[in-house]
Image 1 (tube, rainbow, N blue to C red):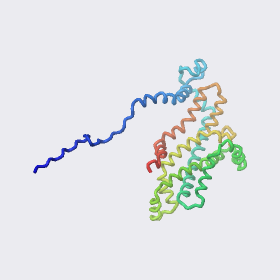
Image 2 (image 1 turned 180 degrees about the horizontal axis):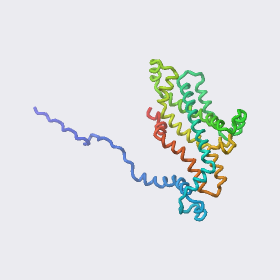
Image 3 (image 1 turned 30 degrees about the vertical axis):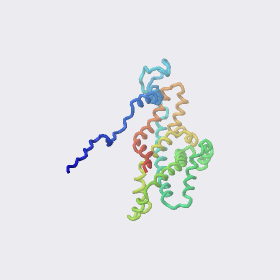
Image 4 (image 1 turned 135 degrees about the vertical axis):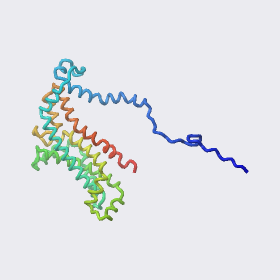
Length: 292
């Protein structure tokens, strides 16, 4: 008795779903985003345009007119007005603060997440509570404390203040990341004879690299762009960071908008470079734990 074989189903035929390709976004989405993009970048384009215009061109044709000149006089004047020294001060404060903060925060987060410390949750919440206070109510106490410690009007005072107010938040973020590391990793390290310090250096820090990079980029932006604490603990203009120096520059060259715009660009370039260099790690650090 002959049997009839069922016809083989062709790929993509009825009853069988072919492989799904990547969903293609409608071009109308990009068309709709063009006005928002232009609106977002228009202030940056305006500042860059003004920075490369001459003072005579701005006075003659107006601030909002199309440029009729191209010069670096604004940048030359801004650098000569103390911006160069202010950039050096900002670099010293930012690099020192970011490195010390991430080091201390990672050590604190490692201890609070992996050791049975009494009231460790309370300790973590107390460390985080300092970031919930408005900085305006702490200006006078911080100034008086720095004077009592003998570090007022020094870069050390600014570093200590930035370190104190950033440590709680960074510890909180790293604590949540380290708690997500599987316990088996630490058990394997103990079996191999690794102590707490070696586990921290050889295992925890490499695994926390995305989170550390993301926090490093954020910390660099926050510390470099800070103005309120610089004006609180510093008085000598030669010790001002770039933000305070830019404020003085605006007061000295109130009518020379090309100099003010050039100073703003000089102040914005370093954190932008850091962000773009760590962009990949920054995005991966923000997405850590999303697929767990």
